[in-house]
Image (cartoon, rainbow, N blue to C red; front, side, top):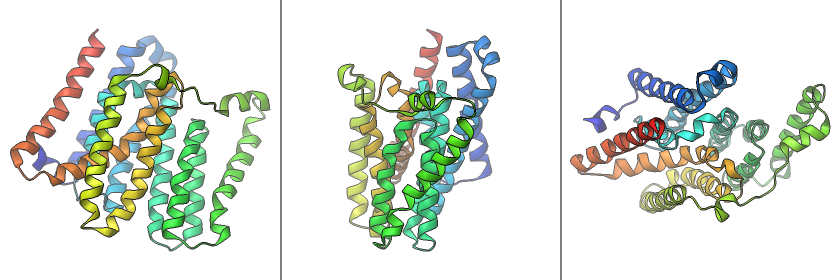
Length: 307
């Protein structure tokens, strides 16, 4: 029944998934932060909630436009499941906003498969990426898939390879023009600078490490299975795979805020899980798989919030 329900993408699916996302967000904020914090930070919390819901909606469009999965709402569903399971990502609004801008960058990067307006797409992808960097400087590592896509889909003209630098210059100039009227350059640099701290290396979190291992296992399984049958889809999935690997590498570089940055991996993992679900031939096993992925995160969320 559940697999049949998510087999299509209709307005009712958007309503249920977006409504569930909003409910989870405010529930986590109310329990984790307290109503006083919500009253003081409601503008920031609202922006984070909007970014989360916009990300869920955008994922549905990415899946549909680039045929990353079959025509269903499973990718949206799995993204929400991951958000609920790792609910601590919801209490850092700036990372949610950065993740939304990163998804916009992903959308323009995947669009490079069509060579029309290649320069404009590279510029737009880079512009959205550097906008994400204003909220989390570590997003700069996701410039690598843009160059991978240029090498895979576009010509070798030097000016195309320089478009990300032009986008960076644009964002830097606009940021300096606005921010330096409020903060000093030293304060801006202190906010944007990055330095590897390897928090997860010295403080291993076995839940996160298990997630990384399982996600990569599913990813390589799906990549290998599709690779022999649909060459066109594999080209797009290579870009998605690059985002996944970089998102996991980032977890081992960043500081104690590693939990929040898990969200950068949720889109590629959701695509992988949706493709894996489509390969399951036995209806009962598929139902059990989906039911488990609903019950376990919800139960763990309730237990964690009630402690």
